Image 1 (cartoon, one colour):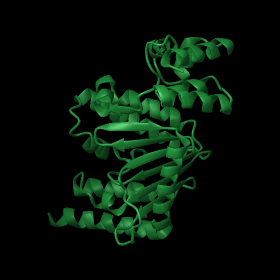
Image 2: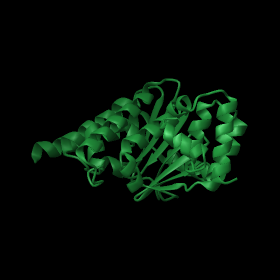
Image 3: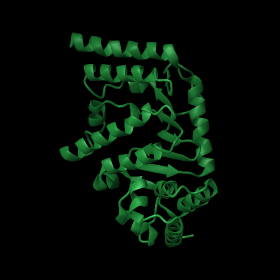
Image 4: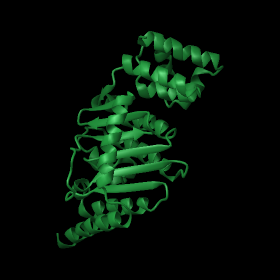
Length: 276
């Protein structure tokens, strides 16, 4: 199946379901023009695009599995960050938000920065400081990131975050802001549907962190590398990341022990501010 066949199939499913293109595009968090290009074979859809469209059409699991696999075969699954910056990082945030809204269990492993769903506005700004965004684009990005965090308060969804200790100690923003960021982690960790684990530097490791990644249930993984974002729904790839996540989760500090560590690092930042 090529991109034209895939687009035609998606259009036929939409028409058979009796739904207007505008309604499906809105539900799938994409523009009507983008959906039109996909349906007419002028744009190869990503795995994320196909999943959002099929979810908007409420297609059965077997149809989703077949067509997302087809998308995996025909779409380029590596998207450079410069492309997202060109089209609008805030738009990509809305795309991810649409996927998160349809995810029951979200697992995040971060070895480079605080997970996006747990970042403070100041931290988001610092992460993007070298991205050459205009001030307007940056503010849109921060707003979209903050809207994404609303999903954390949906008690029907579960979130597991794994963060390496080095991330907590990396002074990306001024000490008082870092202290506030870490306090946010402690606060969010007390929510019943959120589990935060910290992989301590002192723990013996049997694996390398290699990259940060997000798992959406057991169906989709998004991997972050410096120049690109990689999306995969291949069951073999998903299983590989699941094993990596489970291995680090086994080492992680959680609950009160984790909070005690984070609070200690927070206090170090506060002391640094007082003595500077």
